[in-house]
Amino acid sequence: MAEQTAAQHELATLVVQCLNLETVTPAQIDPDAPLFGGDLGLDSIDALEIALAVSKRYGFQLRSDNPDNRQIFTSLRTLSAHVEQHKVS
Image 1: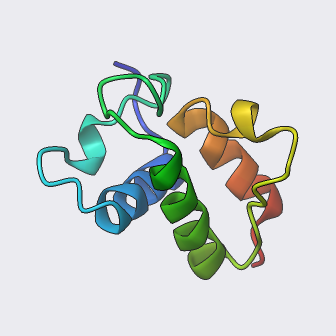
Image 2: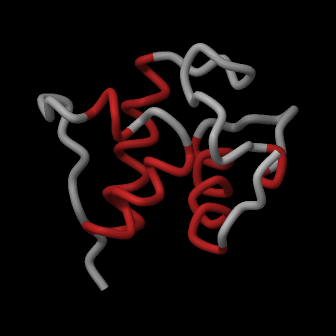
């Protein structure tokens, strides 16, 4: 498993908390593993929950009509990169 960056760990913590993932710790989320259809078992409702948590925490919207969502939500690494690029400081 690849090592998480500080930003990825922060985002993994947010995902675990907002989805109440009781059997997963933030450190167990592989930055390169698929968020959906993988070991986490996340679905489209979870994507909406993550988007809401990200907007509250980082100050920008992850819109459901964004054509890049499939790529953005590919893995913790891609989601974290998108958040780092768009977050409001």
